Image (cartoon, rainbow over all chains, first blue to last red; front, side, top):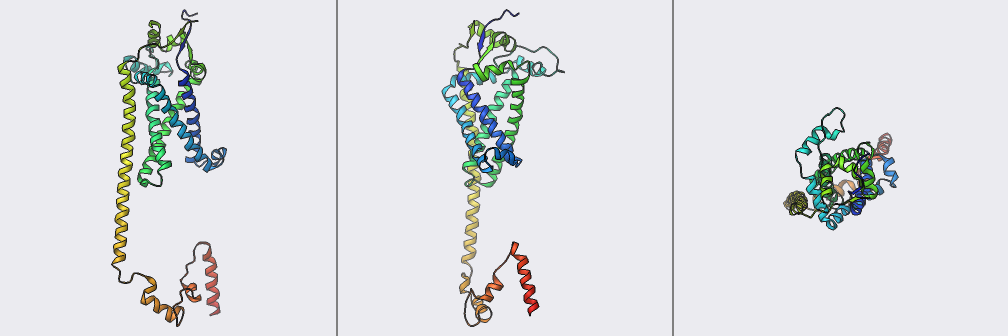
Length: 217
Length: 118
């Protein structure tokens, strides 16, 4: 039995709400987007046909944009702390990447202590920020300016939108597997999706550097 | 039960990093907008030049209206509607109106019948 007792508040209520909103809208955007790209009528029909699926995709995109925008405006301090964490890479982060945090069976080695987010989560955070930005700023011209902008520019937007979405879907797929299914890391699932708390013992193990800071406060 | 909560002060470094990400986002959006506006300007310029060229060609023509073309008028008077200019005459409609798509097989049948009758 561990000596470390208690809970750590890792994700605030607003963060969890924003995460839920982004999860739901991203799912709808992905499903409808796959339906459009591969011309899968059975997907579009779930939303009432191709035209309705297109409307759903666009308005889900609006929520996908408004959610994090409001969150950042209302929680600039929290957002800045998050950005500071995910853009700070030390030797421990690079060593974490060498061993992939112990998640890959054939990559042996000691997993170094991590911040509030491990090196993989940091890379995912950066990918999500700039990936979402790209799909948002290419998506709106495809909707609102399609009759006004040059066709070559529209084609450019479609290409960027598609490939950024493909990369995001693959990255979020990995994120879902590690956060909700993998037995080593799914302890975080309840924290982000429900109450925001993680066992102090788990935090001391997975985020040792951050936990030592919390203890010293 | 002990609850651990983040209480560290908001540092200048964190502020600049947060603001920096927003600034980079604004710059990326601006660059994409610039690409879009430049592409639109090039497209508009092409359309303007093309339209100007068409107008110039039209203005340089001696005969600019088909219904005032003496050759067309003579064609109607001599052949399509003998003795008058009647664009909707039966012969002109039969010979000049185009059929396409699903009407083609029907047109071929008509032509075969008229050939047989002749």
